[in-house]
Image 1 (tube, rainbow over the protein chains, first blue to last red):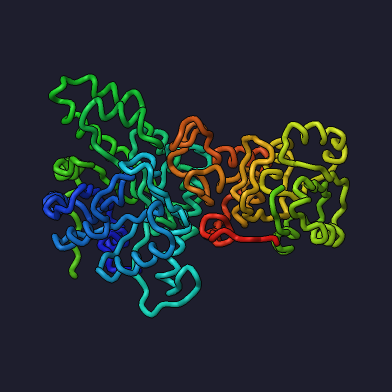
Image 2: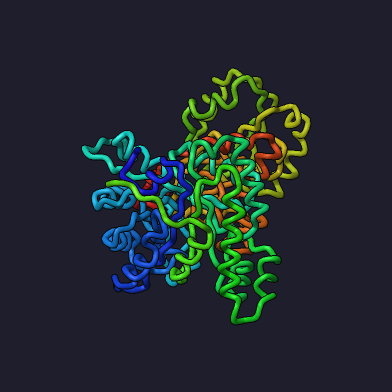
Length: 309
Length: 211
């Protein structure tokens, strides 16, 4: 065990992992986090808090993670390179570890153009792969990026993202390999709606033996409405929503669409868990956290494993 | 040509070892600054076979270069590597005109106040002081990727377009395509370490380089 992370523990025990996403509020209200954390508790092994997702100002990921930790959950802090240079990133890494947060997902970040402050200056001093390496060197070598040494290292379980649906497709697995080389312990993928393409990507992952070097959590998400499916299909960069998904939701009466969206998510979970090399799922019920218990139960993931402290 | 300095030998020599070379040398901005002696010394010390050399003004003028290199086509065909002494714009132009050739720059382009845009075209050099074109097949991720990514495309690259603006191509898609064509895609698997931004424009106060 590299850390005290519950996520790492469940993965080490070779149990199929379930993590969940928790969207922080566009306000200073801690009760939003507590309410969502109570929904997730007992249903997931760890929860992610996004870091300014789509470049919209929200509560800091580390702060919301700490509130969720107080509710008894294992937090995964998300850290993007969009808003911080290497000095700020490393300061946050030290602070996050000192607060007892054990997991960090390293991301480049959505471009500021998409958010509510498109006139902001993007930072992008380092990229997500360089961030993974930086955190690994801090943890395993006790070294800052500049090479100087530190007394107490941040013991973080290091994650990174992978998008099997972006282009160039043939380079996607190579990019995953770079993240593994850089030091990623776990990977969370983009939301999967095109299971065939994901399976094709996983085959390329297995061909390189990467599934034995890193734990891959398949990203899944329920869809609330036909409009949301169409929006993801046409407007969200890097998403692949096949026509069959939209048609399935269109095929039921309007009042049953959200129920069908939940069932669709369970069906996708059933398919991806059969794929060799998938170590777990990451469930992103964004602003719809209340359906997480239902999905996790329907997928047969309850109860979640518990370990003696 | 903007203002350049010769890259360290240890960065270039292993890449060109025992290869047949054709050399491009740009003298376009010579009146401002060109490290003539350094370039001559560098070329004189090369042990590799030099099959030809073109010294021309304004390697940044694509139409002019396109015509000019026709006279050298036999020599260029013989060469395994094209070695370019110019600013980042010149290197990108050569790469774009000779897509089936491996192009290496020997120079880092430095920032120079008030001296940009002698020829107006689509190729840009941010004068970042640490040129990556040898790694990316002559396409610049610093000047053309909105996130300045150095280790490959982000998750928003789709159908060859950049997520930030569908009117601009994803330079990383172009880099992958170019290197795949050259059979050198494996080169992109090396981890690129964080960039030294202090040698470029963005972090530095304006520098007075010449009296």
